[in-house]
Image (cartoon, rainbow, N blue to C red):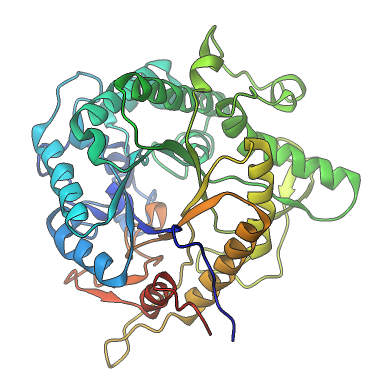
Amino acid sequence: MHKLDFPKDFLWGTATASYQVEGAAHEGGRSDSIWDIFSRKPGAVYGGENGEIACDQYHRYKEDIALMAELGFKSYRFSIAWPRIIPGGDDGKVNKEGVAFYKDLIKELHAYNIKATATIYHWDLPQSLEDKGGWAERRTAEAFAEYAKVCFAEFGDTVDQWITINEPFCVAYLGYAFGVHAPGICDIGKAVRAVHHVNLAHGLAVKAYRAAGLKAPIGITWNPNTPRPATDREADKQAALVARAVETEVFMLPILGKGYPDLVLKELKLPVPIQDGDLDSISQKIDFIGVNYYNEQPVAFDPNGQFKYGAKPSWQNTSDMGWPTVPGGLARQLLWISGISGGLPIYITENGFASDDKPDENGRVHDIERIKYVRRHLEVCAGLIKQGVNLKGYYAWSFMDNFEWAYGYTRRFGIVHVDYVTQKRTPKDSAYFFRDVIAGFGEW
C-alpha cells in the first residue's frame, strides 16, 4: 500500500480567480477590466467567450463554500477584483457594494472554519488604468498600492493570508510581450517596463501592509519557469540559465533582496526602468512564497531565438493544455527556490490538470488522469518535506471548471464539474480523492 503522509498542520486549500468564476460583470458597481475589453476583441478568446457570467460565484458563493467544507478543505484562495473595489482604478472612490461582497464571502468561509487567502491582483486591471498605459506605466504600480491600502483597511485581519499579485510573468509577458492575454499588446519594451512596475507594485503594497500593522502572513505567487537543459551540452545548459533569468529571476530575485540578475541587465541589456529607491521598495520582507506549478519544459540553445533559447518537445503525457506531466520538475524547482530564498515558507498555490471531463449516465465524473497527475505531484511534495523543504500547504487548481482566459470554456481544470448552462456543480472523483487525502487516507 502507498500512502501520502503530510504533517498535521499542512494547509489544504483550493483556488479560483475573480474574473474566472464570479460573473456578475455588470452588477454591484463593478467596472470593466482589461479582460472584459480583451474578450470583446475578435479572435482574442476562443469562440468570443467571456467571464460575464462565468460560474456565477457572485451569487452562488454560499453553495460553493459549503461544498468546499464538505470536501474538507481548510483554506480558499480567491482573488479580489480591483474593478469591484475601486471601479475608477485610481480615483480613490471605494465601491461599498464590492467591499460588502468580499466581506460576506470571508464571513461565510469563517463560518465553516475555512481560512480566507486573498489574492489582491489576479489580472483584472481596471480598463481605465490600461487606457493610461497600464502596467507599462509607473503610475499603475502607485495606483495598485493605493488599492491595496483600501483592501487592508476594509478587510483587515479577517483575511488569514494575503497574496499581493498572481503570476507577474503572465501579467508582464503574456499581456505586453506576446499579446495572448489582456491587454493583448506585443511590445517587448512595454513588457520589460511592466516587469519592473509589477515588482514595484508588490513592494509598495507590502510596505503599506507593514505600516498598517496587520499580522497575517503576506507573500506573492509566482509561476516560476525553471526549465531543464535539453542535453548536457554547455550551450543548452546556458540556454536554461538564460531562460530562468529572463522568465523567473527578474521577478524573484529583486523581491528576495538580490536585485535584478546581471545576465538580464548587463548581458542582455534589458532596459529595466529602475529609479533610486526602487530596489529597497521592492525587497520588502515577505512571509512566504506562493508557487504555481504545472509542468517543466526542456530548452536548448537557439541562435534564432530572441534570447538565444527555445523550448524543445517532451516525451511525457500531456494535459488538454498540451503541458507535459513532469513531477520531477516540481522537485527541482522547489529545491532551487528553497535554496535562494533561505528556506522561506512555501505554498503550492496552484497545481492541476486540464482534461475534458463529462458526467456519465449516472452523473459521476471519473477524471482518472487528473487524479494520477495530482497524486504524483503530492508524492513529490511529501518527499520534499521529509528532505527539509519548508513546504506548508497545497492549493488545488481549480476548485471548479471556469473561464480559462484565452481558451474560454474549452479547458476544464476543476475538481468540481460545472455545467455552464445550468450552473450545476458536480464533484469529480478528484474532489473525493482530495477529501480522502485531507482526512489522512490518501492511499492506493
